[in-house]
Picture 1 (cartoon, rainbow, N blue to C red):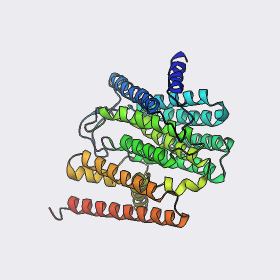
Picture 2 (cartoon, one colour):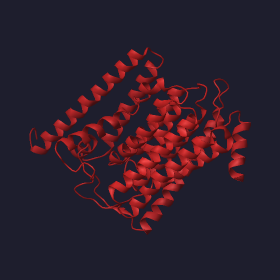
Picture 3 (cartoon, rainbow, N blue to C red):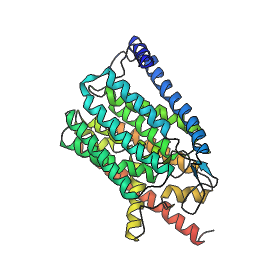
Picture 4 (cartoon, rainbow, N blue to C red):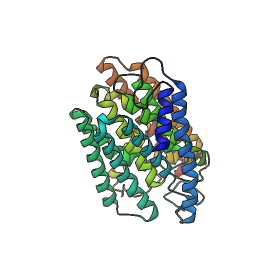
Length: 362
């Protein structure tokens, strides 16, 4: 607690508490301190996690249902989990008006990360993991309701926790993709929220998430020396759901524009899952059918797909900023066009992959 208190005092002296983000007089040294702290936690924690994973033989082996070619340790996402719990503890210590909300986020995160951590050590039944995710989502929704969120915010807290936890798990299949997308989405939330009243908690938590992911990435991209593991991928999805719910508490009207930064992962995961269901495949099992996986396989490298998805998300964030404040009909139209365009890109990537794998056009 002494270390937390000292750094908190430093932030206050720098002109900003980790809960309030004033519209004027923004102290960049305070932001820099905050980012440096969680980048360091992410980097050092990932290095320690790699040593632990090697010692415990927590190694993902190459195979037909995996996109990597060399044995690689897993479980590095535990560093991001630790960073998020530290940030939540800090924020809760400074802001005592939303204790229930912060406790709910932390509890749900521990549940999702905990079941993932156990699964990284020894595979668990899918139903047990799903049941744990449901409980975590319900706890998050309870916290959002206690903080004054309306029915839409509460429902989104529950549904998005379930959806994003599993989407990030499904989409964590190539080097750098899941962590870079989480960092970009977190940045997008910061830029979209701006300095609006009541957004301070979400902003500081989003900045911590972004920094922790950036600390993880040097050991995961462009060549992975450790993977997130289920502990990390599920945690990223849960924290992003919590952030989105936090941003909806002041007004749930922000929902459509906040869905734009998530479009790359939501489109690929949803359409791939739907197509597997139509083909009556065991969609819950590991596979390499996502557009990003087939794209990376066709190129013989992961970085092309990772950078391309980053580019899409960056454009989506720019579009979201451009239409923010527009009439609801305009925002909904832009959201629809973005998701439709993404679906077309997904279809073209899958079709091209089918042709390459069948030998057409070689």
